[in-house]
Image (spheres, rainbow, N blue to C red):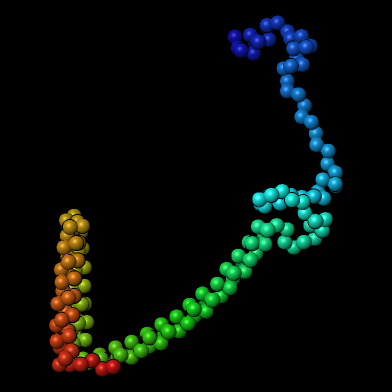
Length: 173
């Protein structure tokens, strides 16, 4: 037997009881055009009414005015940042051209050639060695850290050796 069958077999409600069995109807709100004549700015710290030409105003609240002012400042800042980025880009292009020119001038310097060859060989050896360790499942952070230290020591040694040889073979500016 279902719950519905058991409930249906019980005593019937009287008219008075059935009146209380449902919620009373909600009162309806009357709408009129007079209700919008005085709108409240909820963002202000106090309640105030607005002028009758409120709907024709382009900026209706203080918060909206602040937002528009903030957006205008942001646009100005964006234009300034774009200008600064353009200037920095031009400077970077000039520096790259200058550095490329210096690299071309010093392409026959034995110190520069020695450093290029040494860095290429070191990169190849480290890459092949790291791949072999990885393939053998022996590559760990400890091994990587140790080799990073070796590379750092090599860089310091190369700096001093290069400075010594640059005294004999100075770079062209």
